[in-house]
Length: 418
Image (cartoon, rainbow, N blue to C red):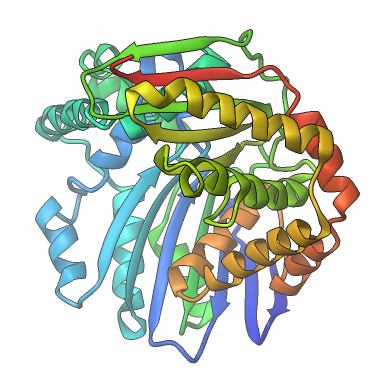
């Protein structure tokens, strides 16, 4: 089954193979490159507590060798044509991707499909990558500005998978066996849960044919439906402080928010922009520009299928934590009770539209949009339709969301010498 859609001068096509695997492409003839990605709808929230970090562990291992290629072959073949490969794991999906010249797309598809479908998971490689991942975990612990967000997620979700580290911990990675990783690989990496996406100077039918021949995964005939929306338990509001000998104190203050399918997600984007999304935002102006209390201060939202987070981050001198928190809470309260202005609404909309369109200036971001649209939303909305959704946001909607969201009980995570 193949569907076509015109999107701002380019053509988006979608084909579902008999195995249930989906292939989406966006043809952009004006470019000379192609980005190709294999997106698996499995992430860290799908792991048992004992296998915490297995998705990320597997991501590492798939680049270590297949039945036809060594780890060196995998990197050397792509780099020999000036291309690049990489991968990443999130809480709800894992992505393997390559970017190459248009003429080298068949090679990229061959290599990337090979690593996803035919990894050998050599026992020696498992031990090598175990050491690499443990070092990665240790390195993360040395970056308090990153770690504090994980501490905050744990403060909200507790032992729920959304509250656990994507990388796993030393307690889960150290004893994890090759057999456990292979079982996860064979059980979860199935064709119906996978989306293949490509964008650039390409031919859709050729991409489909190459994927069909190279990505021979076990199929089920019907694509996996969207991740189900379920009730995600959250902990009571809490304050978690981790004392560390750092120059700055890093803090995150926030609360549970809305999921990515909530119709208010566009209003949330506008709200976030105005409150803490840029240099003109209320938080940046009040805390950094007027008082010089922090170099970095911003708000952000994280959205999942069935829940989300809204939070404010700031890094400041340890002695300024109380003042920064007081100002942050005051700004949140003012937004909740007094709302925003028409000028702020216009600026917030402009930021949303501009960042979205400017983010589509390369084939990698366009490839990601195809895959995320299919995997997370069940459709790839045209750019003009997404911009219209932002334009349709009203001041009343933003203010109502602010009243709802910013009056919720908050949790606080702090890392530093406090």
